[in-house]
Length: 146
Image (cartoon, rainbow, N blue to C red; front, side):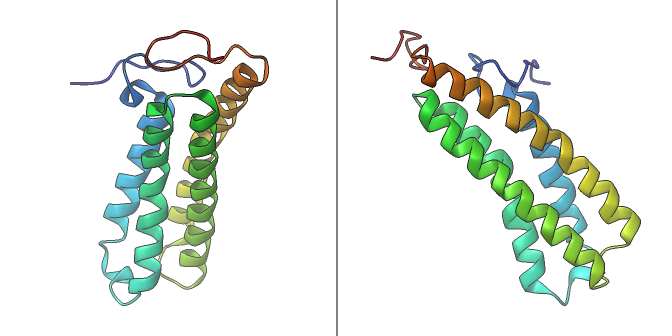
Protein backbone atom coordinates (compact mmCIF):
# COMPACT_ATOMS: atom_id res chain seq x y z
CA UNK A 1 0.00 0.00 0.00
CA UNK A 2 1.46 3.35 -1.05
CA UNK A 3 1.67 6.03 1.63
CA UNK A 4 -0.16 9.31 1.05
CA UNK A 5 2.30 12.08 0.25
CA UNK A 6 2.43 15.38 2.12
CA UNK A 7 4.69 18.35 1.63
CA UNK A 8 8.01 18.25 3.49
CA UNK A 9 6.96 21.26 5.55
CA UNK A 10 3.88 19.68 7.11
CA UNK A 11 4.20 17.86 10.38
CA UNK A 12 3.04 14.45 9.40
CA UNK A 13 -0.09 13.49 11.26
CA UNK A 14 0.00 10.15 9.45
CA UNK A 15 3.59 9.47 10.47
CA UNK A 16 6.96 9.77 8.82
CA UNK A 17 6.04 7.32 6.01
CA UNK A 18 3.82 10.00 4.46
CA UNK A 19 6.72 12.46 4.13
CA UNK A 20 7.95 12.69 0.53
CA UNK A 21 11.49 13.33 1.76
CA UNK A 22 11.45 10.10 3.79
CA UNK A 23 10.12 8.17 0.77
CA UNK A 24 12.89 9.55 -1.47
CA UNK A 25 15.57 8.88 1.14
CA UNK A 26 14.28 5.34 1.60
CA UNK A 27 14.46 4.67 -2.14
CA UNK A 28 17.99 6.08 -2.25
CA UNK A 29 19.05 3.82 0.63
CA UNK A 30 17.61 0.79 -1.16
CA UNK A 31 19.47 1.71 -4.36
CA UNK A 32 22.75 2.10 -2.47
CA UNK A 33 22.26 -1.17 -0.61
CA UNK A 34 21.58 -3.06 -3.87
CA UNK A 35 24.48 -1.29 -5.59
CA UNK A 36 26.93 -2.38 -2.90
CA UNK A 37 26.00 -6.02 -3.49
CA UNK A 38 27.79 -5.87 -6.85
CA UNK A 39 31.12 -7.62 -7.31
CA UNK A 40 32.99 -4.33 -7.65
CA UNK A 41 32.33 -3.68 -3.95
CA UNK A 42 33.06 -7.20 -2.72
CA UNK A 43 36.71 -6.51 -1.90
CA UNK A 44 36.19 -3.18 -0.15
CA UNK A 45 34.24 -3.97 2.98
CA UNK A 46 35.01 -0.65 4.67
CA UNK A 47 33.68 1.49 1.83
CA UNK A 48 30.67 -0.80 1.39
CA UNK A 49 29.88 -0.56 5.10
CA UNK A 50 30.23 3.25 5.16
CA UNK A 51 28.03 3.67 2.08
CA UNK A 52 25.33 1.47 3.58
CA UNK A 53 25.49 3.11 6.99
CA UNK A 54 25.26 6.66 5.67
CA UNK A 55 22.48 5.73 3.20
CA UNK A 56 20.46 3.97 5.92
CA UNK A 57 21.02 6.87 8.30
CA UNK A 58 19.17 9.38 6.12
CA UNK A 59 15.63 7.90 6.19
CA UNK A 60 16.20 6.56 9.72
CA UNK A 61 16.94 10.04 11.10
CA UNK A 62 14.05 11.58 9.16
CA UNK A 63 11.75 8.99 10.73
CA UNK A 64 13.16 9.53 14.21
CA UNK A 65 12.97 13.29 13.86
CA UNK A 66 9.38 13.24 12.69
CA UNK A 67 8.39 11.05 15.63
CA UNK A 68 9.92 13.41 18.20
CA UNK A 69 7.59 15.37 20.44
CA UNK A 70 8.94 18.83 19.67
CA UNK A 71 9.96 20.75 16.58
CA UNK A 72 13.31 21.60 18.20
CA UNK A 73 14.07 17.91 18.67
CA UNK A 74 12.85 17.10 15.16
CA UNK A 75 15.15 19.69 13.61
CA UNK A 76 18.18 18.15 15.33
CA UNK A 77 17.48 14.78 13.67
CA UNK A 78 16.77 16.40 10.30
CA UNK A 79 20.20 18.05 10.51
CA UNK A 80 21.76 14.66 11.21
CA UNK A 81 19.94 13.23 8.16
CA UNK A 82 21.26 16.10 6.02
CA UNK A 83 24.78 15.42 7.28
CA UNK A 84 24.43 11.73 6.47
CA UNK A 85 23.34 12.68 2.97
CA UNK A 86 26.54 14.72 2.57
CA UNK A 87 28.56 11.73 3.86
CA UNK A 88 26.84 9.50 1.32
CA UNK A 89 27.60 11.91 -1.53
CA UNK A 90 31.27 12.04 -0.50
CA UNK A 91 31.50 8.26 -0.32
CA UNK A 92 29.83 7.84 -3.72
CA UNK A 93 32.35 10.25 -5.19
CA UNK A 94 35.23 8.30 -3.65
CA UNK A 95 33.74 4.96 -4.78
CA UNK A 96 33.71 6.31 -8.31
CA UNK A 97 37.30 7.57 -8.11
CA UNK A 98 38.67 4.25 -6.83
CA UNK A 99 36.86 2.24 -9.49
CA UNK A 100 34.08 0.59 -7.48
CA UNK A 101 31.39 2.60 -9.21
CA UNK A 102 31.19 3.78 -12.85
CA UNK A 103 31.33 7.59 -13.07
CA UNK A 104 27.96 7.82 -14.86
CA UNK A 105 26.25 5.79 -12.13
CA UNK A 106 27.92 7.88 -9.42
CA UNK A 107 26.78 11.11 -11.09
CA UNK A 108 23.22 9.81 -11.30
CA UNK A 109 23.20 8.87 -7.61
CA UNK A 110 24.81 12.18 -6.64
CA UNK A 111 22.07 14.01 -8.53
CA UNK A 112 19.50 11.82 -6.75
CA UNK A 113 20.93 13.00 -3.40
CA UNK A 114 20.08 16.63 -4.25
CA UNK A 115 16.30 16.40 -3.94
CA UNK A 116 16.13 14.91 -0.43
CA UNK A 117 18.78 17.44 0.61
CA UNK A 118 16.70 20.32 -0.70
CA UNK A 119 13.55 18.99 0.99
CA UNK A 120 15.38 18.44 4.27
CA UNK A 121 16.55 22.05 4.13
CA UNK A 122 12.94 23.21 3.67
CA UNK A 123 11.77 20.96 6.49
CA UNK A 124 14.46 22.30 8.84
CA UNK A 125 13.56 25.91 8.00
CA UNK A 126 9.83 25.33 8.51
CA UNK A 127 10.17 23.49 11.80
CA UNK A 128 12.84 25.94 13.05
CA UNK A 129 10.60 28.88 12.26
CA UNK A 130 7.83 27.34 14.34
CA UNK A 131 9.88 26.96 17.50
CA UNK A 132 11.68 30.28 17.02
CA UNK A 133 8.37 32.13 16.67
CA UNK A 134 6.82 30.34 19.63
CA UNK A 135 4.29 28.48 17.48
CA UNK A 136 5.84 25.06 17.97
CA UNK A 137 3.42 22.31 18.80
CA UNK A 138 3.66 19.09 20.70
CA UNK A 139 3.31 16.44 18.01
CA UNK A 140 1.00 14.27 20.10
CA UNK A 141 -1.60 16.71 21.33
CA UNK A 142 -1.14 19.60 18.86
CA UNK A 143 -1.20 22.13 21.72
CA UNK A 144 1.35 24.97 21.58
CA UNK A 145 4.44 24.26 23.64
CA UNK A 146 5.02 26.56 26.59
